[in-house]
Image (cartoon, rainbow, N blue to C red; front, side, top):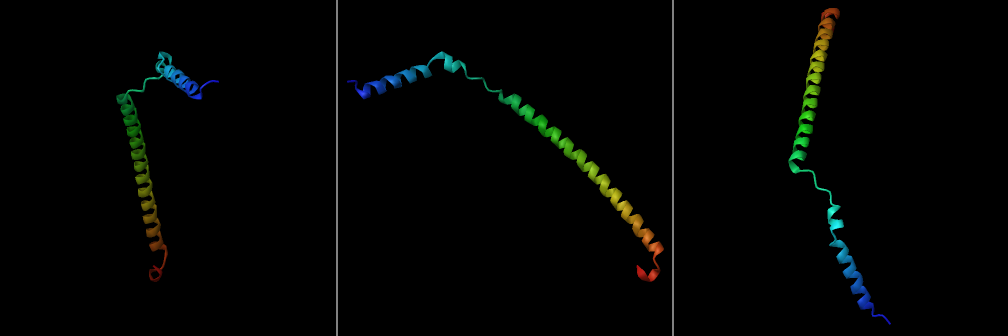
Length: 86
């Protein structure tokens, strides 16, 4: 009859020897260098900031246009309405 402890120890030693083989360690892909990752993220940040600034300029122009139209309508209203209804 086989000793269960011996078979367990044999399977552990087999597993350990497989983990130590060069084939397993050579399968690890090198990580992307940190500097390249930072540069890429910085470029994405700058692109997003430029996009937000462009939207802010467009929003500012739209607000100024709205104020101009509201002012024009207000002055027309004053002209068209009798002086007591303003």
